[in-house]
Length: 634
Image 1 (cartoon, one colour):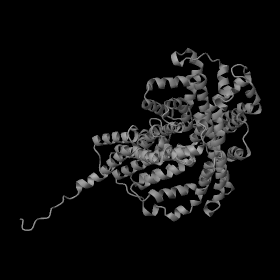
Image 2 (image 1 turned 90 degrees about the horizontal axis):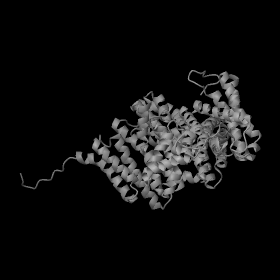
Image 3 (image 1 turned 60 degrees about the vertical axis):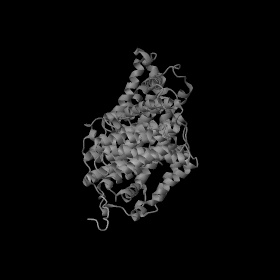
Image 4 (image 1 turned 180 degrees about the horizontal axis):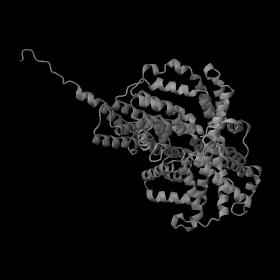
């Protein structure tokens, strides 16, 4: 992102803060109709991307070029056209009423500008994926088999992407971005501007700093807490990793491992209640389930994910001989209490949502609570400048999310209107046959593939449209469990090689090889892969069951995660031979996922194996017992 100066900087501040404040006002003042809201959202969100993000690494980093200004102004016109005359879209019939020349030009320009904005601000991979879908719409009549679709004239392609009501650039996904996502981004920006990061850091060192591998365990706690407010795994890595990665290296962790630990801990923030990433809000709207239900269903899974990271870090630290943090670097309970008042906004948020208020209404009052609570202590008070900075930061993030969601809208519109979505589902269904396990693995691989270099939200949207209905046909899992499974693998893609955005960001800070760092992140995040699959087979993980079922399911999956993580690390109380690591991996997979066997038995077996690993060296090294001699014997 560019560092702007002078009038352009202040003008951009005004634009971004005004945009965020307007979206924030809508939550309490009432939203415009969906089409007007979506067009206004992109009208405000797309132009700043060309000013804030340079076109190439060689472009100026402190000022926008003339071309950037032309693109920014051009990005206003297509959305302005729809915002000024929404009845044109409401009253026309797609494919039947012809487009005017102006509409064809504006639709073409807007599509190209969104592609360029995505390339600049997010990922060339996502931009390329959108291009492939658009290209398919032009050549689908030339392709054989399941890839065939009738000839689509250029005007119909523009119609699908630009002017069709409820589809493409101004469809439902953009509406979700303009409502729930934008409001929670403002809430997260206020939390960060208020200094809540100090609370997270102090909690992390207080909870984990005194134990083996203290610096890395602090990372796990802090990144999980911070990540639920940032909504971006890459942002989480950049903000927390700048401090934690050098600290881990200082304490003895190799650079790639330090980066991998940070990346694995950071991606988990997107699945950490009570404030999960933007994809969770999209999920709530897509499946028409209250957000508080998704938060409740995701709670055990988040704990299991971080259990896996914790176990991996603990045994890796023991393997490397890394001890706790120095005593003077560990926060005291008094340090934690200095910022404990920032828990009030989280309580307000969860209470309002539990009372079935809308997510954006709840987020509005939780944001107000952040501002009010900041004045309870002198060192956290938010003056006008901090409030302005919070709105500016929120506005900048809204821009990035908006273009990502608009790109996802193009992809889903292209896949749906050409029938390619059905073709993909047919291919996966054909390969899987009647096997639910094979179907789950194919959908998981699709998530990881589509998530390579693609932000979590669009990756989740695309894969959920393809895979979720197929799994739902089997009737073995609830809709929430299926979508949490898809979300987990969309999130894990950020840490999975060969293209892993969070891992690459961590590697840059650690000054390490990106692929090696991504490999370490993949290993540290093993618990996420296991938990994601377990959602399909263990409904109790989403709190859908009795207390006994919830406890035993958690016990079985957690024991499996522990064994798998130890097998990855290759160390318990001493180095483990390869054959034992293979057996531990197999045992862990069976304990976690062998759903035809009772959860209690799997859990007891898993923890018995774990206990044996810890106790066996002590038994072997215990001195042999010397029997007392009988009196009179030599």
